[in-house]
Length: 242
Image (cartoon, rainbow, N blue to C red):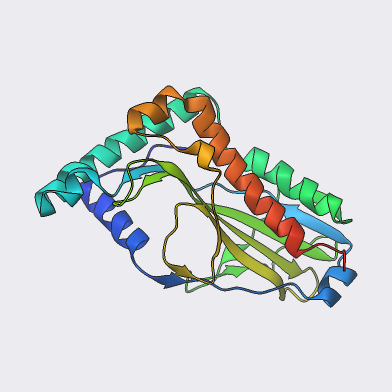
């Protein structure tokens, strides 16, 4: 986990991407898929290279372009400070999330192994992942990405809440066809079609950035708990129970 290479341009691009509309692929698991898949290999999880702490209100909502610049620089500094604290605490989200994914699958009756040596590669156009080089002795391969994480405060609220976006993909180990593919957005909501939106626990709300930093153990727990909520939904989606 590293601090982001912040510049005003980078902040502006982030804000534009968060506020814009997008769409993600969604594949539901069939009963037949769930029945046949007994052994699952989970590939090692990856975290995003940056963690964001962003306030979409503040000066940006009061003073136009100049306010946007000021707030963008403030968000950059807040993100840097938050990441530095996470690093000092030796905190990552991927370990707890991997454990909760494994636990959810095992409760569903799957035999689960973790492979830390193989990863899919990006296709030539960079828009999807190619699993043709991943070979396992299982019925299915699961890949989990934490694409975004941090805390957000919208223009219409005064509090910060968790923001965790997780993609979960299950593919047939032999044919490499998708058996299940979901994007979970826990906490702060963006406009993304087909994403599964899960509210974060209200107890992980912080009245200000200073409040967030003063209660870092709770802030970390909010991110981990958000991942657990996504894992629970994966378990429900892939449950072998009728």
